[in-house]
Length: 263
Length: 328
Image (cartoon, rainbow over all chains, first blue to last red; front, side, top):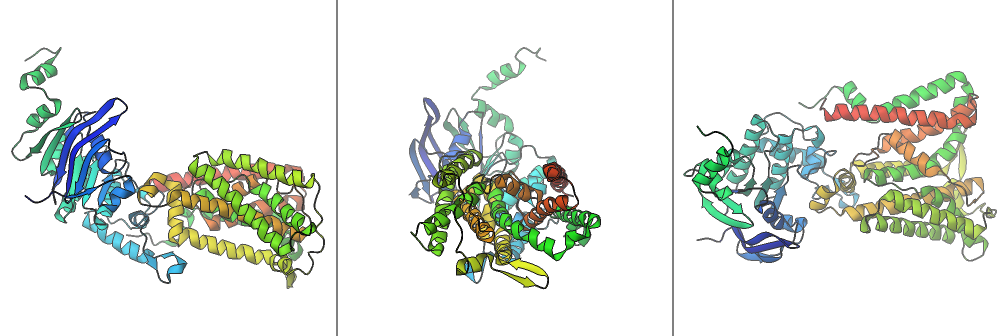
């Protein structure tokens, strides 16, 4: 089998005496949307932070297409093609959509010594990208991020990752606090990202959103990956919930009906 | 559809409020006293306005990046003292003393920037400390006395910075051209250059900027240096024009300059700044100071008006900002 895009082996991360990750093994294939699930404190965010360069790992290895890498900072990770989109995505609200898309990589108009941004080129690319991620409304690329809705901001962040050819886009709770229509929008941006050749890790508390979009589900519990090959097409939500909590059928029933009269 | 109707777009600009205020101010003062728009009064007002203005221009960029600099007033006093002390003692020529003063100012800006970005101390505290150090040095070196400033006549430096000539009835100093050049250059940097994008991002969301590979610390240190150098230049210009180098001069300028910048529409919290607004803010405050005296209001009442203007403009900007965020 081909080398996966990302492979993380025996990842350990401890904060003082607290073991956040214990020998976690995780991989993402090319052109794949992986849903990462787990209860609070299962280690999802820590795993993602390690992969996005936000925190250093205690031990373990990360491979990108079979090549070992070390990710010391978020810009390190971005340089390796790993883009993380946090809930309050990493955008500057005062700047326009186009200026955010190109922040740090603004195209320069010749002569170069004038250091002048090519704003027309930026706007043209931004307009195309917004269309590509399927923003239905016609929003001009000069609109400041501050006047966009939560879903539109996610779309801009995803568009940026797609444009700069990030191989892996990590979405941390992208559908939190979004309305139904906006959530569907974000899910379709994720699909269009995969269809254009990118891989995604999708983290969400709402299991139903995960089921709607991912190709494979990975479940973490107490710092370990306990299941990494769940097919959402052949597995039920209830079953995945059981794996997340680590309880048997009966234990879950008991927990749910605990203190309530059973019917 | 992009909004093409001109009038609502003009009104929505942050510079619109200050512009209206300036026009009203000028009209009111002129209606009270027609001498307000006399060539002599305009020339006199402009001479000092552009000196403070140079500092305000640099402060605009620094505040857009989310920091500010309280040490500018002390540098305004210290730099000419240093230049004249070096020259009077025979150590350097006037020109070399000028360069030395600018280099020392640049170093002070570097120290400010280093404390703020590397030790993560708020710029309020760092530059307040620096204000005391610099002002204290100026007073200590001079024993509190003004320095001798004669014999600048005919030096090419004085000619280039404050040489004066008449355009019609208007007496114009060279410093006006330096101010205009600086306003154009810094306005260009802020709105057109990629550095400007980084300055706004550094003030708006520094962690997002850093994640995109923007050297936020570098940007801020550079702007602290710019702020110090411009304050130093303004001090030297003022000293050459008035033939005075007083270690106490520039006291309180830091707050007046910050007021000019925020009246113009630059956000105190960073992320958004406008050079055009700052130019209007500079004019608003200086016209106010001049006009109040001309129409016979006691000069001591000046601060009442300045305070009221600041409060009024802040209310307007916050209202515009909320409308803007609501997407209208």
